[in-house]
Length: 479
Ligand SMILES: [Zn+2]
Image 1 (cartoon, helix red, strand yellow):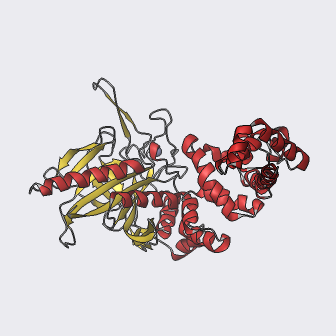
Image 2 (cartoon, rainbow, N blue to C red):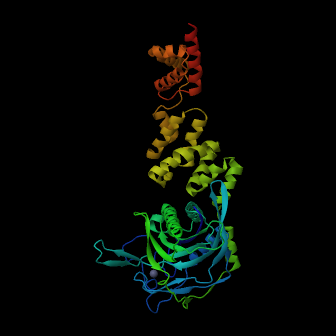
């Protein structure tokens, strides 16, 4: 407890361009091993890489969305090291002149906004993939991922808790989805993070020794790994020992980390300028055109929702975290006209279903059918329970809400005679409860209410039933 946690993140993002970074090979997850590669991405002697313009565009887009400056002049470098998944024995990256630098991203922690500095965003190529056989005897290499375009987002060490690290990564993911430069599928490795973490005595300005945790591929893993590492370092410092600067690997199943390599073994990558690629001189017009085409970002949307629709900041924050959900909120509100009702339903019933079955449900529900359902609810034509039923059916069948309501006979029953007869019947059926009520037991009212609503098959109008039930019970008391 006596330490401040200092965290910086390095986030690798695969860009969803249609072709790879330096060749025309298809950029897509999966595929039969070694079917999406060519002499260029395999780094054969005599081949020449050519930079994919889309990569440049997407990187600038990401930079602008994260409030970065764009460099008029930047270049590529070779990072030399040997690994079997990298046939060239070097990775093309940007060492000291990244394309974007000096930005920031605001995150919401509790009810506070916190600003996290972005040191740089640079472009690099991804490596291939090693597949190890289960008996540990063989390793196979799939080069399909070689030359997939990546950006690396490097933060300043402004993150001060594992929870903030998770929120930050979540925010970055949302932004990247809004600007549509990556599919951000963490389970497929499109977005992965390295966590740099150190502790220092509370309030101190002297930085502690930091460790680096590599390749975390879920929001949960980032938070858990950071938490475990902070605790591990605290135990070492509490025991009066030294934390070593090292690279560690997180095992999410075991919930612990292991040393990959220490500082002594740290690599000297012998960076040097990539001779096969010319430096990049960003044209002002190019940047300006991208700036003009930028979509509305989550933070901007959040504010607009509060101002335009008058929903609470909390609702706006939750809804804008996912672009598809935000789109659903807007199209539904357009039909239903009651923004707060829509946000309530999204935050409860819709999010519950997304958590249970995944985001695919957003393909079955849209502003039209969801809006119609909520409009009928808002007008009192169906009850809350019926609206839930309608949504479940339309998610399954895609049927129109009005048709579902007619077919299942869900319209609210307001026929005075019918309601009155039902109430009389219910009271007659439960003489003990009536005696309870007459002797002053308030709870009996709720009992009758429930029984009447059930007898009306959930289609009664609660306020009407309540009013008529009170009247009838009063009459019985006076008898
Ligand atoms: Zn290729």
